[in-house]
Image (tube, rainbow, N blue to C red; front, side, top):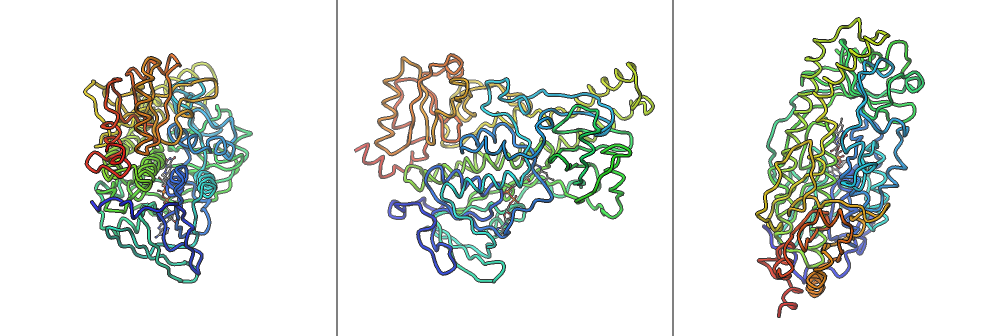
Length: 577
Ligand SMILES: Cc1cc2nc3c(=O)[nH]c(=O)nc-3n(C[C@H](O)[C@H](O)[C@H](O)COP(=O)(O)OP(=O)(O)OC[C@H]3O[C@@H](n4cnc5c(N)ncnc54)[C@H](O)[C@@H]3O)c2cc1C
């Protein structure tokens, strides 16, 4: 790897707008982000939280409103939005009618008969009735998410240059050089940076320029993505309002999601990868989805392909990849943007730590070690969701009596409930992925592994654990105050009341080295149970870095978890001498 930032290379102020040229773009920035989609912007926000201003170069001038891709932000992503101070803003900006934002409903059509309504799982119950998460999931359309992130990134000091695209890039041991071009004028400019992050989506120019290959399967299947307007659905619907409406009928299946009080979107699975959209009777499909005689106006039709593609490297020297540039998976389960949000958080604080002089090169290497395996797992699980969806439809369909399907009466109702239970058993993992969402376990050189046994990982089950590498267990400190709120921007050390002296020893040493470390006394009984070691150090991304006894050596622990074990930095050298 390229040597990390040397003290002489650091900037006193990490200001992206410190040196403007004639075109208004700076000629040198600490972090240059290519792509101002949701993940580039999330990275800009996390960097901004640490006082590091970034420059985002985005080829588009507007956030495209159609087609809407990501619709579900899971509880973990919302916890990040809470950290960034925009969870409430995001919920207020969401356009879906509140009644349609919660459960998963299985039905024959949006105005037909219901097989069942399900609200299991943290995704939709979330913080309403669980202390294991700080936030519940939110149905919110990707353009809205992008705008909320953009406002926050700019508020925190990021510069977003719209209408500029990356043309070429290079790097040496001192930094990266990117050539960008204004899309409308063809004007070109060179921008230097300490680090460059490719958040430029599936076709990533950064990934291709860096020569990073991808593993996995591409173009596994094709799905339809349809948008239409039909306010009548809301007034004529007899089913329980659903955030996700899984529609199963002998004539076909679809997953329909309400966008706002008049607009809808649906995914229709199971087409061959070489599908010609002109051969599909899209109007007939939408009519089946909304129900007979319900008027609608089609506003978008498209085909997207299912890919399972993961970049083989997330880091090459001073270049990094995040979001879709690094990983692609089927959207069934809603994992990929949520995973990209976690990429942004994971990478953001590590870049900031390195720029501020308290993060070592191993910290930057840990980004790939920690995030890439999660993407591999997500891709497998997402494809399984597609397979289960189609298999469940075909299996249960063979037992469905079409005459009973839409009939009145108790007998028909109980038959539909039985089919609903069978359907839900088949597809539940897609909507109820607690393990994928909350049980992301990191293994890297900056996680102080301990030998205690851990529960086997499951995609659908989450049990809080303070094992190093795991998401730090959540607890409420009071009705509105999450343990995460108390943690602050840097590291935190959680200690039991009898271990205050040892904890303060860690804080004093962290201060000497220059590592931000917030002490938190575990007075809440649930938090005290979930953090069962005398001391636990939690990272800025709310993952446990280390836990241990009160007589542990603070210097050794702090150097390990900041990636400085082999590279004692200036502050540490001074502190240790
Ligand atoms: C149909 C569908 C439904 C989905 N649903 C969900 C869901 O419910 N939940 C979920 O978590 N995920 C979902 N996803 C995935 C989600 O949409 C992506 O993971 C998300 O868009 C990734 O964000 P990103 O910022 O990495 O990339 P993008 O959104 O692709 O943004 C990349 C940005 O980079 C810009 N760019 C590209 N090249 C250049 C260049 N050379 N110079 C400058 N700018 C450049 C682009 O203009 C773009 O703005 C879905 C995807 C699809 C296709």
